[in-house]
Image (cartoon, rainbow, N blue to C red; front, side, top):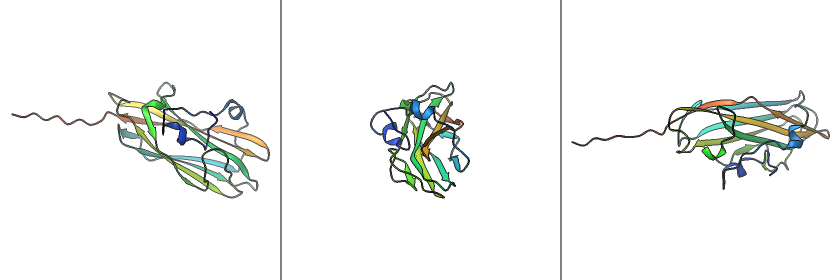
Length: 168
């Protein structure tokens, strides 16, 4: 399945699916200067069942069109093993791009953001557990395929709160 900034629609809207850079994009060269990438994470400790936001920003400060802009998310456990079935990812809120299927582009001097709401599912953890999000960004600049995997953003998932009531 070739999905990149074509991403969350397949990540967990219907069935759990991990999205990774395709081999062709994974072998592409790193992002050149002029393509700036940022990831912002709203929370680093998240209760099971509560969503947190992850925002990915791509700035094209070049004078060229960045074609086929793609963003991939991979949710991983502490060992780096993909665990998409432990999370739900809502359809992202997009600014600067309209599609998540890799058919969109980013003009010179333009910025695109994708904000994802990620929710740990109730079966995810019995005790506090560390997870991470690996963000991959890809595109085509002046005919050259570019790709970059950003450092893993870690977070801790806390067990769902429980209420115990004792009646006398």
